[in-house]
Image 1 (cartoon, rainbow, N blue to C red):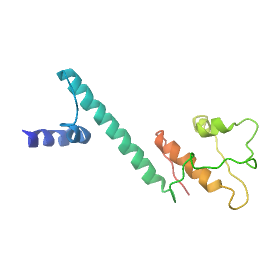
Image 2: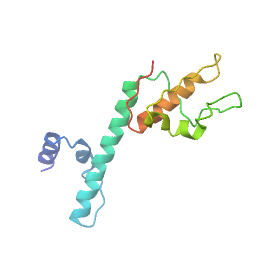
Image 3: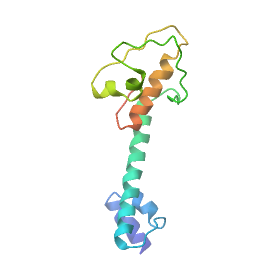
Image 4: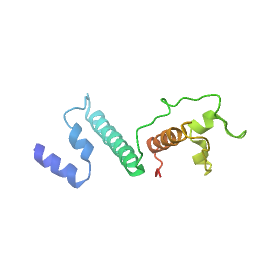
Length: 127
């Protein structure tokens, strides 16, 4: 029966359910189905994030947590650090242009913002 279930999951493109069949705790049949579907949803979300990160072709794995905000970073008056980090500019369909001397963190910030955008479901391409 296990092989038949795995084949059916494959045909229905439910790859993450097939992986979690024995790992889902439950007390009722409805809860079991619900937990399996949550695993499928989570697996698809993680796969989408991984695919977005791969397609973005980042040079390295820079994050916003590792970015050092210092006093020499100037943002336009209409844009706050929080809005930048929350990616509000993407939702407003605006561009961000990073300008500065070499070694000031422009690439790090661009990569970190792009990585966060990928994690939030946006398609990104790093050039």
